Structure formats: structure tokens, C-alpha cells
Amino acid sequence: MFKSSTQEVPATGAVPRHVAIIMDGNGRWAKQRLLPRVAGHRKGVETVRAIVRASIARGVEYLTLFAFSSENWRRPADEVSILMDLFLRALEQEVAKLHDNEVRFKVIGDDSLFPARIRELIAAGEALTAHNAGLTLTVAANYGGRRDITQAAQRYFADHPEAAHGPPLASDAFDRYLAMSYAPEPDLFIRTGGEQRISNFLLWQLAYTEFYFTDLLWPDFDAAALDAAFASYRSRERRFGRTSEQVRSAQNA
Ligand code: IPE
Ligand code: IPE
Ligand code: MG
Image (cartoon, rainbow, N blue to C red; front, side):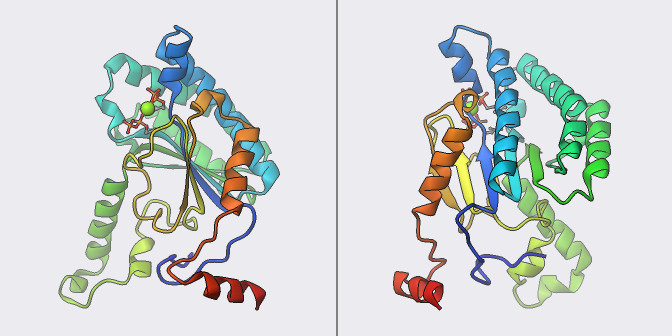
């Protein structure tokens, strides 16, 4: 169990321990090249491979990638089915390689609307890699931050019926009901594609995360771009509500 950033100041280092990424801009990348959107999504899968490798090499412990939001069902049916197909192929082709690299693979989000074969591959991949000690790679698929929070609240009150009438619930007692309770909160949030918004990603966990936005489209993002994000991260002073003087004297202590 990890302490919440609003309860306790977490230890921070030069390399972000947990990096969460909104991989955006696949469609625009394809459009720039007069290609169908699927070409951008395919290239985006290659970027995922490169960024997983680079994250392992840099000592990142948790990498969380937003692949499909609960609102992405609103896209045209043919694009949704292409995305499902790509996810299926990636699961078929990549999980064994992840396992060879000691990666612990996780999926968060509501998978009940996914085709059965995808659900089976997710369950098998998670089971196969559950005890790996390397990078924890989480793919957020049909994930929505608000649904995560409301479901956690429902499950919390189902376990603690007396709490509805009791004192306010403690945030660290609640954290463990969220889908990502197995990970510390993200240190660094990256969004490619130029938009500066959260799009219903990890609403609860981003409370004290450092934000980094880049105009690079996801298919163009690479290890050098990841290093640029890490350099920006290193230049920041994370204060968690304290003053700069307090932070510096704590560092020198
Ligand atoms: C991100 O790229 C991938 C998903 C949301 C599945 P987009 O498909 O959103 O690409 P743009 O934003 O249209 O360029
Ligand atoms: C966010 O990208 C979700 C994923 C990358 C999976 P979108 O492209 O769906 O976000 P909006 O609609 O521009 O906010
Ligand atoms: Mg987009």
C-alpha cells in the first residue's frame, strides 16, 4: 500500500518512479500524411514498444498508458473496431516479450464491453506476469477517471456500511478501492498531441503529479522526447503544499 500524496510527502528522485501518458495525436499524424487514421494507430503501437523499452532502461518502475477512454466509444464504429483489433494483436504478440523482460502487465478499465478473446488475453497476460519484478506496465483501456472514483466509493461503502453515517472517510482508506491501488501516484504526467487537458484520465491520482505537455504527436514521440520530459521533470521543485525553504532544508537534512 502506498501513502497518498495528500497524507504524506512522497520520496522523489531524478527519474520519475511512475510515469502516466496520454498517447494522443495518432489521427492527426496519419492525416498529415494523407493516410487513414488506422495508420496512425499502427505507428502508435510501435511508439508504445519504444517507450516501454526506454522506460525500462531509465529505471522507471511504473508506466501507465491511456489507450482507450470510456468516451472513445463515441468514435465511428469502424474506428472503434480497428482499435479493438490492434489491441487484440498487440496482446497476442507482445505479452510473451513483456514477460521475457520481467514486465508486470496490468489493464485497468471496464473490460466487460470488450470481445471475449481480448478479455481472455488480458486475464492470461496479467496472470503470466503477475510475479515479475521489473517495470509495471498498466494499459488503461475503456478507463474513465470518474467511473473509477464512483466505483471505488460504491465498493468502499459496500465493505463499510456503517461509514455512510460515520466520520468523513480517510483518503488513504479509500485509495485502495481505486483501480490502480497497486501503484504509487504518478510523478510525471505526459500528454502528446498538443492538447492540454486530462480527458478523464487518472483524476484522483494526479493530485500532485507534475504535468508535461508536448506538441509532438504520439507516433513521433521517442526516447529522446521522453528524456526531454524527464529533464523538465528534474527542473521542477515539488512542494506538496510546503514552502520552497522547507523543501530545501528537508533535502539538506
Ligand atoms: C490517440 O490518438 C489514440 C486514441 C485516443 C485511441 P487519436 O486517435 O485521439 O488522435 P487525434 O487526437 O485524433 O490526432
Ligand atoms: C484521450 O485522447 C484518450 C486516449 C489517448 C486514449 P482523446 O483524443 O480521446 O481526447 P480528447 O477527446 O481530445 O479530449
Ligand atoms: Mg485525440
